[in-house]
Length: 230
Image (cartoon, rainbow, N blue to C red):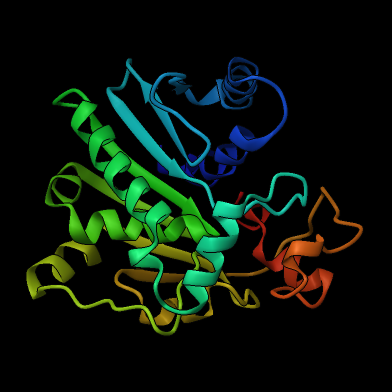
């Protein structure tokens, strides 16, 4: 299953596209039909995607990052971006809400099911906070992967030695060398794996206005994309 983590992280962005929820869930299930997983409409929302494979008894929880299409940017995303820049993301209301939701999703998962997680960009924040602060999440999740995960240089990563040891076994931060957003992941808890940048088939013609303060060139935006890990 771990080979599909980047694909699953990418599908979380489908939840903020146009159309009703049923339409978006159907598109996700079409996109991942070859994996054996299916999106749960009742347990998924615009921030967290809950995928389940009853045949293999696996569940995957994917955290969406900041949308880069320029069409679905919300005030909540903007507040999260600002708090991230200030190193206050752990105390952000939206982050706390998603940490609690992650905890509830893990609790709702049947015993005996393997749970894995993924995230991209700002989605790294609630994923890591839920692992650091929720013992039940940490105990049930066997693997977590972030892709170009955001981390502020001011983030407080203080945890007990026992928690740090546990997370180092479970968490892997995948990043493209040229990516700016994940540049501070060197200080994150978990392994860090570097990747070479790949050609982007879905070429951006320009930088979305709301991201122009982060990405100064199209090359920087491309370095941040999930296509680099698929």
